[in-house]
Amino acid sequence: MISLRAISGIEDGFIFGKNRLAVQFFVPGIDGYMLLDLPESAIKTLHIQEYIFRIVMLLFLIVIVGGSVSILCTIRMAKPMMHLVEVMQDVRKGMVQARFTPDALGFEINTLGQGFNRMVDSLLSAQKRVEEERVQKEIYAQELHFGHTIQESLLRYQQEDMPFLVETRYLAAKEVGGDFYDLFRINPSSVFIAIADVAGKGVSACLYSLGLRSALRSAIQSSPLAEALAKTNQLFYLDAHESSMFASIWSATYDETSRQLTYVNAGHWPAYLKKRTGALHVLDTDEGSIGIENSLSIQPKTCLLEKGDLLLLYSDGVVEMQNAHGEYYGAKRLQYLLENTGDIHPQKIVEIIEKDFAVFSGGDKPQDDITLLALQIR
Image 1 (cartoon, rainbow, N blue to C red):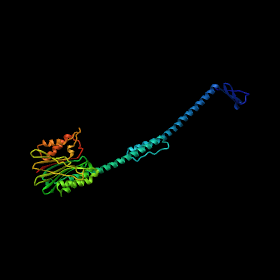
Image 2 (cartoon, one colour):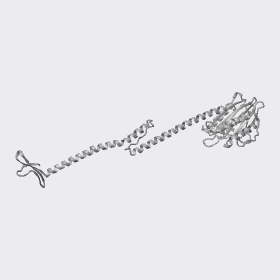
Image 3 (cartoon, helix red, strand yellow):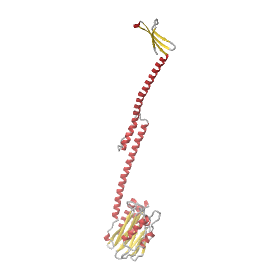
């Protein structure tokens, strides 16, 4: 408790005691002195209140000012992250040209943003390459389709000009293949028949097969079968020996007047002749393949064909077809099929063989070009 009392005879000033603080001063109105006496407890209370006030003010400054500064710093330092998020969202929406711009206070965010920029650039570059490859593949596919169309057109023949009923099948393992068959009239009484298989598959085999076909057609129209094959072999050897390319051909000429078939097998699978009586004959000669050597010694054979006889020519894609168990279709299976088929109409024979293919292969795509040519004497 603070007490005031008048003390006369004491000059103005401070009086300090062990447990008090007194202040004496003159009061003119009462013509005397006043003494303000503060006990120790009051002094301590004043000090504590002062300390509390200062502490509260300090905490207030720390919370208000420090908090405001922290919030401002957080907002400022979060700006690079928000920018990176916005760039990512823009890229997700399709704005692929959006890029992160480094910030002075970005620190690790700058590293992430620059890594994101590099990733987007890399993805765009890869996308461009894929698109270019897709366009090139489409162009290549169109060219292959065009080549397939050309090859199919070259396999056509004049059915009404033939002394046979004819049924054919051609199935390339790729868009284009190395197999071909040929059937055309050499003169009013003779017809040329051929089936060939150039080694390999695809574009290269197709190109060689077209050259072989042209050379063979040109030679057969001015020379007998054996001589025409020899000339064709020389021309093919000149074009293909450096690439080790070769071909197999089974070819024949049929004379309508004499009904004589003259044939040569140059490295190909033999043809089958099914007589109208049901007997099955193998038409084969022991000649080498086309293009292996510059010269080829050829000894043709002959046989007579009668009305209703069936001649079946095929490529190695037929007998060398494999199923899922690695088993080959084989010539014996084809021969057995022909021997046990009563109907010898070309279309029926080809359909029966196709069905047997499907059963054997399980519907799998052929690994090699498949060609079938069935002829029945009218």
